[in-house]
Length: 213
Image (cartoon, rainbow, N blue to C red; front, side, top):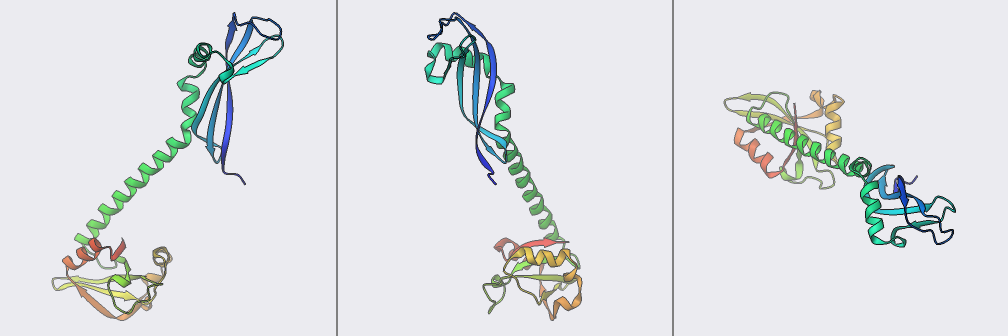
């Protein structure tokens, strides 16, 4: 299946008077414009060219683009190509731009949310971490794992470390979504004690991939 390519759209214009056809000497021509555009999944993404043309209303002889005198081509273009028919040719770029802005906003919201989680840790918060940044003798092919807060007190933040390690952070998040990470058997028996500043440092250093609550 072809997901991208180029297409053209013909836009009808007004009748042009006074241009003599070289084939039949008729002086009436129908004007038109051709919008060539690049598309993704059949959605017009951006214009690649705009050409003017005329067609003899008697013998149908057609002149397009450079075959027309420049002043006539400019005249036809100004009348045929409007904001209403050219702007939709950039629909793909507009959609891409909106999606990028939405993605950036979502990242900012996630960052602010996780900053709040670190500043105010709670029991059963999940920390998706890069184990190689925190522990020695970790298989670099499976660097992602999970830590869960089990207690928050004046003495520090107690956390359990999961028994599972994955090559993708998304696999750890999948365990959270499916409820596997909520069972005690998912974690080792030993716990680690952190101070609030430790959690903030781990997040700032990139050892913490994401935080789920």
